[in-house]
Length: 142
Image (cartoon, rainbow, N blue to C red; front, side, top):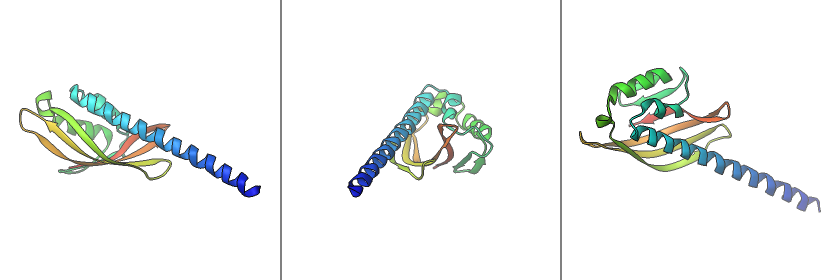
């Protein structure tokens, strides 16, 4: 009888953990969709709302490492000064993986369709739950 009781408790715990993971993954995927929509609307400020607004945000790109939300925003605005250069963003999420109760990693491919020439690459994002919100704390895009 004890074994059945403990198996029942374990089953409930696993079911709740699975449900939480599924919910968190859905929230992360929705935030990435919000980013795509903001980009395609030409709104870099709104696009950046998914990032951690901290000097500790890390962005790794072809020019090296940038630290800080404000500097990352400035670099985006400098590199993509208008909607012609921004183009239309699309991406394919290849993997969303829970690393712990506080972290998820996301790997994907991005593509910009532009009249000035298409661009494409890959990204790895590290999401962290901060103040009950999932935010990107590290972005490695190439």
